[in-house]
Length: 321
Picture 1 (cartoon, rainbow, N blue to C red):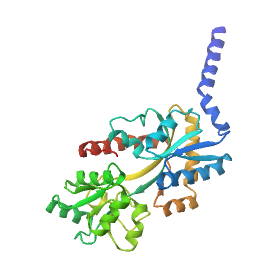
Picture 2: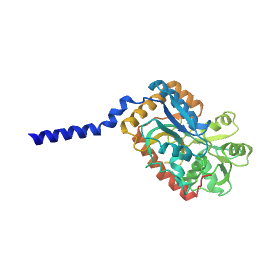
Picture 3: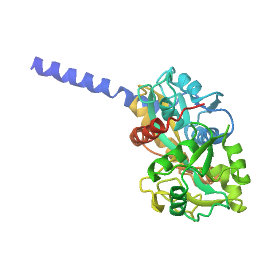
Picture 4: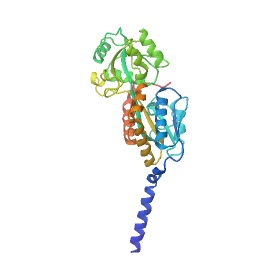
């Protein structure tokens, strides 16, 4: 009898210990939450601010956006060193988990040092060509590039979303389109419109105005599924390159060892914000689509992208600025 009582007491104690992280969730948050992200302007900042506004209302606590200049390493170092209690988060694009493939020494490990919360948003690029290029579809562009190897040029900043999208295209299509480096997407887009280069994969938010004015010809979007931002465009994957996908993703993370209950709560509340119709419209106005995922889904997406794009980056010798 005494032995049975002891075993029962130990079982209750173990259950209480294992449930301690779950018990923490109903009291969360009890103070302001900070979301660390990139400098003001751009997709990171837009996503962080819209999510912060929505969370502030849902939680009844202030959610602060902490903009940090420099590379993603600055924000990542702040968050990985923070207390794993859900009060310090990071929102950043997928360059966060891709950067280690483009630099020899990165101070953080995107898998070991962080707890995934949710994949918040995504933004496709658009395969566009100068109007003088005699290609009206992705298949025609591939045929043209194969007929004239090394004669077509594309522009991109080294190591950016546009650069990786183009190199993935080259790899899957087996074509030789020459990279012309630029300091950013803006200068590259200007070069495309002037005819200095012929091909580009600009992000949705930067190219929409030029497409509406017919200064460029859009062939396809880089997302795996058709985009609500460009409903009339097919995907590259459905236009001759099955499996092609290269999009800018923006995700939320906490420090490693954040209690699962808090991570799950944050994920649910952020997804709730993203599902609001007014929030969706604001994101679409910036060329961004809302997603929302569980922590487990984000971890799976990261793993797949690191494996696939990591190989493209290594094979192409892509280095970050």
